[in-house]
Length: 233
Image (cartoon, rainbow, N blue to C red):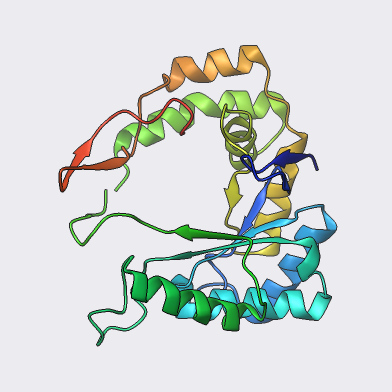
């Protein structure tokens, strides 16, 4: 496992970040604890969750896991704020000062820690955001990428993670395994080499700047679809 600088903070984080979205959703507590232990054993020191993941259960499970293994001080812990935490409270979501402060305190309690290393705005947009499903074009891309994965004797997910991790501006791709099997597979991506030739072949399949699911951008209060920042993939 390699370690990279997290922006200009001076902090070093692992080349993969354990995303805990599934904790409390489809991953039970004991499985979550085992996955956190396995990730740390493999060298992962960067973990990401959010207050809205299973209405706080993800943070609770991650906090309990780090309490049990006593590895909190070794982990760069990230969580997020925005999502709806109370259906009956009109102030129970969003990025207001009130909600951010309230939820930061709640996240600290759930994570059983007195500090958060990276606190993020989960989503900057209001209620106008709508889901956007994958089209048949996605499957065409997958079929074209499959031979590259076979050549490298890796899974498609490992190829994707290795490619993302080698893009300019990407510090640590967030993995979101549901099971230990998926975690082990994701961790194997650090051994997949991406060469300049690989990048050229993949760029020919998915040209830089093109997107299957475009990033929405907010301009003058409206959502517009535009090209991503050159260092955002």
